[in-house]
Image (tube, rainbow, N blue to C red):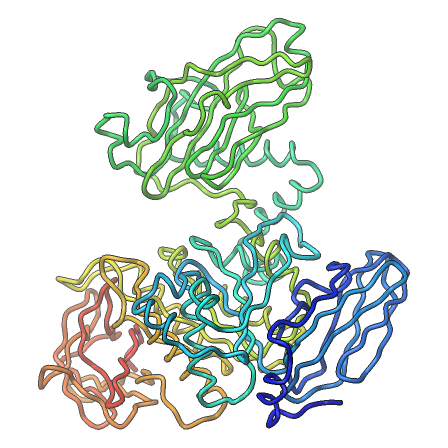
Amino acid sequence: MRRALPILLAALAASPAAAQSSQENLALLNGLFSDHAVVQRDRPLPVFGAAKPGETVTASFAGQTLTAKAGADGAWRVDFPATPAGGPYQITASAPSGGATASDVLVGDVWLCSGQSNMEMQVSASGDAWNQINNGAPNDTLRMVTVEKADGRAPAADFKKPPVWKPTNKDTVGGFSAACFYFARELQKTRHVPLGLVHASWGGSGIEAWMTPAALRKVGGYDDAIATLELSIKDPAAANRRWGETIKGWWTAKHPGDTATPWTGAGAWTAAPNGLGVWERWGVPALAEFNGVVWFKAEVTLTAAQARQASTLTVGQVDEMDTTYVNGGGIGATSGSWLDRTYPLAAGTLKAGKNVIVVSAYDTYANGGMYGDPAKRALTLADGTRLPLAAWTYQIEPKPGGDPPRAPWDTLAGVSTLYNGMLAPMGPYAYSGVAWYQGETNVGRDQTYAPLLNAFMAERRQGQAADLPFLVVQLANYGAFAEQPGTFATAALRDAQRRAVFADKRAGLAVTHDIGNPLDIHPGEKQEVGRRLALAARRLYGEAVTTGPEVVSAKRVGDTVVVTFAQVGGRLVARGSDRVIGFELCAASCRWADGKIDGNTVVLTGAGSKVRFAWADSPTFNLFDASGLPAGPFEIAVQ
């Protein structure tokens, strides 16, 4: 019988703390339908999985039983009627080939929390962690699951590793996303229903990696990358050759007229230390703090009989990305410093005599180089002959000219890779909303970020409620202060986030440029991030709360510019001064502008064609509202 929410706690108290699992076949039910799961209330509930093609699957939930026939790919789905918050229930599925059961399932609101490292940061690494973990009350109505990291060149049907749902207690909360957990804990104070948190993040990831090819095509500019990615599935060797040509094109544009192309082995090369390793430790001044591209070369001489064979090239680990060439042709490219590179070479790739192997190693931060066990660097022929690659030379790619492009299958900076590995396996699992904390990796590409974010939000709503709430955490303060008005890439990315959210009526923004750390891109203050996310959600639910002063307009009035704000909590406040700081007026260039509060406006002295506020990587400003929330950064035109 269906249990209503008012008796939820009593029902939980009467149930075993850990229900027995009967998951004989995890694939029959999608991995998110497992013991202790939370499923979405008040909407038709899709339940789905995989069986043998053509099998009839019988599924039961909350007193209802439905059947479906598995398609040619084995996929099946049923949609149960909308169910109010409550539980616990069982979800069962059976087919001639087996059965599966998810026990102790609650019905409530399910939130997807995703992004990069600031969403990934665990409670145990955030501020006041010991107290929050050890003194927090257990809460069986707040349940969490973390999706195993996985990438892919094509959408995965199920998860790399079965997700495990966990109730909140001191043994489980420390390893979960801090921003996601604190958001849900705060939200549950006003929405008294079970909450399920599905966390899927990967530090360093760009937004493009989380989007489908269809969404990227709508934004535009990704057709070639998508085509190369799709080619890599059908013909990996052809895709590697094509990608090798892309890097060649990048180099040629940097070195017009230069014929000493490094992928052929031409040019000046310097002997590298034995064993290679991290280049910052070589004692070479030019590499002591170098982030960029270093080319590595090794040579191997083959007989005609050896050259006719297929072979395998292994070059060990490369921090962080490589594009590898043999005799001038691209044969592989991999992202991830933790991965050993293994590239198959078809017969005909090698030649009798000298063969040139070149690795273009690209490092974006911290240590770089070819490292790990030197014995892993070898050419192994089909007949088993193993030819070690011990003698390496190198040349440093000059910095001017920009960074190289990233392969479309790059784990974190490619196209659709994390959608394929982490979001696609979720299928049509129903959500109440999405919380998104990402953008650091896209800093410097702010011109494309707003359309990407809008397309990503629209895509995440497909198959969900059309008005699915989408919460975005704006980037916190990190990096340079502004001694003079200027160009700041993080500020521009924040404004792109603001514009994307304000263009979407069902999106909310959590402003955080006052609670970061100028010296740490991973600030520990995640409780306040969670509180502000909860405020943004409540505002989208129609509650009378504010998320902080939002700029509405900037209008010229006489010899002043009047900037108007909405969503002001009580009144505007200039902390620590009788004037507002942090504003700029811009025409041909920008200058600081004094401001005075007048109701819900700030009056700036002077003229300009646009107004900036809090425009720096780590901005200095003092405009808040009486509730303690900061005015968000922005750049807008003067009307």
